[in-house]
Image (cartoon, rainbow, N blue to C red; front, side):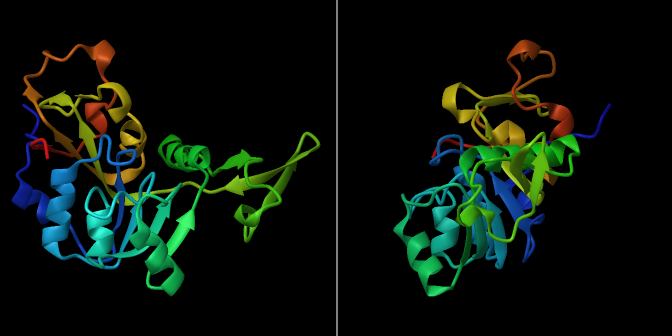
Length: 220
Protein backbone atom coordinates (compact mmCIF):
# COMPACT_ATOMS: atom_id res chain seq x y z
CA UNK A 1 0.00 0.00 0.00
CA UNK A 2 1.31 3.51 -0.80
CA UNK A 3 1.98 5.80 2.14
CA UNK A 4 -1.05 7.85 3.12
CA UNK A 5 -1.03 11.44 1.88
CA UNK A 6 -3.57 12.56 4.47
CA UNK A 7 -2.08 15.43 6.45
CA UNK A 8 -3.30 17.41 9.46
CA UNK A 9 -3.25 21.18 9.66
CA UNK A 10 -0.42 20.97 12.20
CA UNK A 11 1.61 18.75 9.86
CA UNK A 12 0.99 21.24 7.06
CA UNK A 13 2.22 24.07 9.29
CA UNK A 14 5.48 22.17 9.83
CA UNK A 15 6.19 22.40 6.07
CA UNK A 16 6.30 26.21 6.16
CA UNK A 17 9.57 28.15 6.32
CA UNK A 18 10.68 31.77 6.09
CA UNK A 19 11.60 32.92 2.60
CA UNK A 20 9.55 30.33 0.74
CA UNK A 21 8.00 30.88 -2.68
CA UNK A 22 4.39 29.75 -2.48
CA UNK A 23 1.84 29.42 -5.28
CA UNK A 24 -1.75 29.86 -4.12
CA UNK A 25 -4.65 28.69 -6.25
CA UNK A 26 -7.77 30.74 -6.82
CA UNK A 27 -9.21 33.65 -8.73
CA UNK A 28 -10.39 36.54 -6.57
CA UNK A 29 -10.59 33.93 -3.76
CA UNK A 30 -12.82 31.61 -5.84
CA UNK A 31 -11.09 28.26 -5.46
CA UNK A 32 -8.65 29.60 -2.87
CA UNK A 33 -7.87 27.28 0.10
CA UNK A 34 -8.76 29.80 2.82
CA UNK A 35 -8.20 27.42 5.71
CA UNK A 36 -4.66 26.63 4.54
CA UNK A 37 -3.95 30.34 4.17
CA UNK A 38 -5.12 30.82 7.76
CA UNK A 39 -2.52 28.26 8.87
CA UNK A 40 0.20 30.18 7.01
CA UNK A 41 -0.95 33.35 8.81
CA UNK A 42 -0.87 31.58 12.18
CA UNK A 43 2.59 30.16 11.49
CA UNK A 44 4.12 33.63 11.32
CA UNK A 45 6.52 32.70 8.50
CA UNK A 46 7.83 35.81 6.76
CA UNK A 47 9.67 37.11 3.70
CA UNK A 48 7.41 35.05 1.46
CA UNK A 49 7.16 35.34 -2.29
CA UNK A 50 3.58 34.63 -3.34
CA UNK A 51 2.44 33.70 -6.84
CA UNK A 52 -1.29 34.16 -7.25
CA UNK A 53 -3.73 35.39 -9.85
CA UNK A 54 -4.41 38.53 -7.80
CA UNK A 55 -3.86 40.21 -4.44
CA UNK A 56 -7.00 38.82 -2.85
CA UNK A 57 -9.14 41.10 -0.72
CA UNK A 58 -8.00 42.91 2.46
CA UNK A 59 -9.53 40.23 4.71
CA UNK A 60 -9.78 37.26 2.33
CA UNK A 61 -7.43 35.08 0.34
CA UNK A 62 -3.76 36.00 0.30
CA UNK A 63 -4.80 39.49 1.40
CA UNK A 64 -4.60 38.18 4.98
CA UNK A 65 -0.92 37.33 4.52
CA UNK A 66 -0.20 40.68 2.91
CA UNK A 67 -1.95 42.59 5.70
CA UNK A 68 0.02 40.60 8.27
CA UNK A 69 3.35 41.74 6.80
CA UNK A 70 4.46 38.24 5.80
CA UNK A 71 4.93 38.89 2.08
CA UNK A 72 8.15 40.24 0.60
CA UNK A 73 7.14 39.90 -3.06
CA UNK A 74 3.89 39.31 -4.93
CA UNK A 75 3.71 38.01 -8.50
CA UNK A 76 0.18 38.47 -9.81
CA UNK A 77 -1.88 39.62 -12.77
CA UNK A 78 -4.03 42.26 -11.01
CA UNK A 79 -4.20 43.75 -7.55
CA UNK A 80 -6.92 46.39 -7.75
CA UNK A 81 -9.28 44.66 -5.33
CA UNK A 82 -6.88 45.04 -2.41
CA UNK A 83 -5.89 48.65 -1.56
CA UNK A 84 -3.27 47.33 0.88
CA UNK A 85 -1.23 46.01 -2.05
CA UNK A 86 -1.10 49.44 -3.70
CA UNK A 87 -0.12 51.06 -0.41
CA UNK A 88 2.74 48.62 0.26
CA UNK A 89 3.88 48.70 -3.37
CA UNK A 90 3.99 52.51 -3.48
CA UNK A 91 5.85 52.70 -0.16
CA UNK A 92 8.41 50.12 -1.27
CA UNK A 93 7.52 47.78 1.59
CA UNK A 94 6.51 45.00 -0.81
CA UNK A 95 7.75 44.24 -4.30
CA UNK A 96 4.98 43.63 -6.83
CA UNK A 97 5.58 42.03 -10.22
CA UNK A 98 2.50 42.49 -12.40
CA UNK A 99 2.25 39.84 -15.13
CA UNK A 100 -0.47 39.69 -17.83
CA UNK A 101 -2.88 36.95 -16.82
CA UNK A 102 -2.37 34.68 -19.80
CA UNK A 103 1.40 35.08 -19.50
CA UNK A 104 1.20 34.21 -15.79
CA UNK A 105 -0.65 30.99 -16.56
CA UNK A 106 1.74 30.05 -19.35
CA UNK A 107 4.84 30.72 -17.24
CA UNK A 108 3.49 28.36 -14.59
CA UNK A 109 2.61 25.76 -17.21
CA UNK A 110 6.07 26.11 -18.76
CA UNK A 111 7.68 25.04 -15.49
CA UNK A 112 5.49 21.97 -15.29
CA UNK A 113 6.16 21.09 -18.94
CA UNK A 114 9.92 21.44 -18.55
CA UNK A 115 10.14 24.31 -21.03
CA UNK A 116 12.85 26.97 -20.97
CA UNK A 117 10.24 29.69 -21.36
CA UNK A 118 7.51 30.93 -23.66
CA UNK A 119 7.48 33.46 -26.48
CA UNK A 120 4.68 36.03 -26.46
CA UNK A 121 3.93 39.40 -28.03
CA UNK A 122 1.88 40.42 -25.00
CA UNK A 123 3.60 43.41 -23.42
CA UNK A 124 5.97 43.99 -26.32
CA UNK A 125 6.89 47.68 -26.47
CA UNK A 126 5.43 48.39 -23.00
CA UNK A 127 6.72 48.49 -19.43
CA UNK A 128 6.27 44.71 -19.37
CA UNK A 129 9.24 44.44 -21.75
CA UNK A 130 11.75 46.09 -19.40
CA UNK A 131 14.67 43.80 -18.57
CA UNK A 132 13.44 40.96 -20.80
CA UNK A 133 15.02 39.35 -23.81
CA UNK A 134 13.40 40.00 -27.20
CA UNK A 135 13.62 37.11 -29.66
CA UNK A 136 12.81 37.25 -33.36
CA UNK A 137 11.11 34.21 -34.89
CA UNK A 138 9.70 33.94 -38.41
CA UNK A 139 10.03 37.66 -38.90
CA UNK A 140 8.18 38.64 -35.72
CA UNK A 141 9.48 39.84 -32.35
CA UNK A 142 8.50 38.19 -29.09
CA UNK A 143 9.26 38.57 -25.41
CA UNK A 144 10.91 35.60 -23.74
CA UNK A 145 9.01 34.91 -20.52
CA UNK A 146 10.76 32.50 -18.17
CA UNK A 147 9.03 29.72 -16.20
CA UNK A 148 7.67 30.31 -12.71
CA UNK A 149 8.42 27.75 -10.00
CA UNK A 150 7.62 27.48 -6.29
CA UNK A 151 8.78 25.63 -3.21
CA UNK A 152 5.16 24.95 -2.31
CA UNK A 153 1.75 25.12 -3.93
CA UNK A 154 -1.41 25.26 -1.83
CA UNK A 155 -4.42 24.48 -3.97
CA UNK A 156 -8.06 23.52 -3.62
CA UNK A 157 -10.38 20.85 -4.97
CA UNK A 158 -14.10 20.58 -4.33
CA UNK A 159 -13.63 16.88 -3.64
CA UNK A 160 -10.85 14.34 -4.08
CA UNK A 161 -9.92 10.75 -3.42
CA UNK A 162 -7.29 9.67 -0.92
CA UNK A 163 -4.57 9.60 -3.59
CA UNK A 164 -5.19 13.27 -4.39
CA UNK A 165 -7.14 12.99 -7.62
CA UNK A 166 -9.15 16.19 -7.26
CA UNK A 167 -12.19 17.65 -8.98
CA UNK A 168 -12.80 21.39 -9.28
CA UNK A 169 -16.40 22.40 -9.82
CA UNK A 170 -17.03 25.33 -12.18
CA UNK A 171 -14.79 28.36 -11.90
CA UNK A 172 -12.86 26.96 -8.91
CA UNK A 173 -10.70 25.21 -11.49
CA UNK A 174 -8.84 28.42 -12.53
CA UNK A 175 -5.14 28.25 -11.54
CA UNK A 176 -5.37 25.20 -9.27
CA UNK A 177 -4.47 22.43 -11.78
CA UNK A 178 -1.66 24.52 -13.30
CA UNK A 179 -0.01 25.23 -9.97
CA UNK A 180 0.05 21.53 -9.12
CA UNK A 181 2.55 21.16 -11.97
CA UNK A 182 5.04 23.79 -10.91
CA UNK A 183 5.94 23.34 -7.23
CA UNK A 184 8.37 21.12 -5.33
CA UNK A 185 5.60 20.19 -2.89
CA UNK A 186 1.86 20.33 -3.48
CA UNK A 187 -0.70 20.51 -0.68
CA UNK A 188 -4.28 19.91 -1.74
CA UNK A 189 -7.10 21.17 0.44
CA UNK A 190 -10.43 19.49 -0.25
CA UNK A 191 -13.89 19.65 1.29
CA UNK A 192 -14.81 16.01 0.82
CA UNK A 193 -12.64 12.89 0.68
CA UNK A 194 -13.54 9.76 -1.27
CA UNK A 195 -12.03 6.31 -1.26
CA UNK A 196 -9.89 5.23 -4.21
CA UNK A 197 -12.04 4.35 -7.20
CA UNK A 198 -14.97 6.54 -6.15
CA UNK A 199 -13.99 9.56 -8.27
CA UNK A 200 -14.81 9.33 -11.98
CA UNK A 201 -11.44 9.65 -13.77
CA UNK A 202 -13.03 11.67 -16.57
CA UNK A 203 -13.90 14.45 -14.09
CA UNK A 204 -10.45 14.79 -12.50
CA UNK A 205 -8.83 18.22 -12.90
CA UNK A 206 -5.91 17.78 -10.46
CA UNK A 207 -3.98 14.54 -10.80
CA UNK A 208 -3.02 12.70 -7.65
CA UNK A 209 0.45 11.87 -8.94
CA UNK A 210 1.26 15.58 -8.52
CA UNK A 211 -0.09 15.84 -4.96
CA UNK A 212 2.15 15.28 -1.93
CA UNK A 213 -0.24 16.09 0.92
CA UNK A 214 -4.03 16.15 1.29
CA UNK A 215 -5.77 18.19 3.98
CA UNK A 216 -9.51 17.92 4.55
CA UNK A 217 -10.72 21.48 4.97
CA UNK A 218 -13.94 23.22 5.87
CA UNK A 219 -15.89 25.88 4.04
CA UNK A 220 -14.93 29.33 5.37
